Length: 636
Image 1 (tube, rainbow, N blue to C red):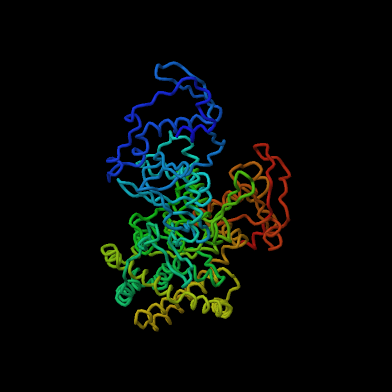
Image 2: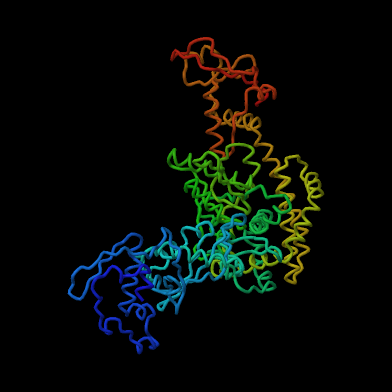
């Protein structure tokens, strides 16, 4: 035995014979060895010989061992010839009986990890429709419990074992064992080398439309492999769901508001249909604003029709929220209908500013189908979310910054007590009426997704031309709203056929209501032109007596209550004062206004000069304001 450990030999350097030790010092307990419950590590370490050999091996290169005789006299200093390289070659790890052991020279020596580790399968984790992460699902088992840990592919090489220890604190790791961490990292690497042939599973952390091998499917939290708070019913009777809700859908509002009722009903489908439109290269470019007085029931009604009905704890968005929070909610509500409440005059200047800014955030996000870009700290990476869904807002007024924003909004104004309270009460008492209806609509879209994309794409040009003629307008955005509403109505009719119903008469009426409603919008769109707004508001100010014009130049010079004076068919007005009055009147009327350039006003024939000029004399306050010369006959 000693010759195996020290091949140079001991006998030549020892003058006295080594004392023979009692057999009890290296006795091996055979009965214990054969026992069924003994730990292999305990069996191996019961012998003195093993302890001595282990001690010699652990001393390593250039270590010195003192040898004593029976009288405890030091006899010789012997240099060990057992060598271990600087790395851990010769050491390995292996699973024995549900535990992982340190293997040295093919012999299990110490327990490294009191459990077993296996890569169960590969998981592709989808955090969005375009972002996916490959992870290894690792099963960790011991006597107390079993755990599953997902380790990202990018972290597996160096961090896998550290992640595993953090996620499984109940499993004991013997870190005091020499080189234990390095051995376990190698062991995890060996597991990984055999993992590529394992089954692949997909896990989704979002809800909405996703294209798989069999076609398009709508992901939601009631699916086994989807983690989301948005949950559709497991089973939907489309025939019953359609007939029950459709009757209510025709009576959201009290009689006399049929066109407005249809706009609300059709728009409630758009969040789920938006993906079809986008696949046909025609993303929806508008939002619906439901205008009405406080307590009119507008928010209560839209809450029962929005995508929030699919949530146990629905996401809530208000215009007082921060811009980043709003954009986060918009991103989370993909392929759904978001309700943003409530556009109102703020009592504070900052509050007013924030609400206006957030209105523009929502209008631009859905009007342009994307959120703002955010440049990263490296000045290279950009974070921008593609928007696919729909939104509606409620409020008392919607003050927009420009005509381009106005064109992105379909405004529906409620009459006083316009909401049908009986219909609203039914929807509030039984949440599943609307939930089952829209779930059935999603089911219909999934079954016909590619067919609908092809149908819409092939008929788009023809539809645009037909609606341009019907509305008598070249305003592209309003024409596109008409095309969108027409297509939604067509899918509702298709859904009815899918559910075994016939609503042909309703579809014919829908075409007329869309045309009548949007014809009025075209008129409002034309009025939103900045030059037309300039003209109409000056006339409104003059008619209301809010534009104080002096009869002559000298009166204006000496009386500071006047903002201008009349001369030779012109109103010569202080430019800054006029702009301030126009903006205030626009806010009062809920009209968007972006001041037109003086050049454009001159070309339109509303002002005499392309630029403002200084007042030729000092006023009573010693000022010489910049004046604008307006042709009053063009205005009045």
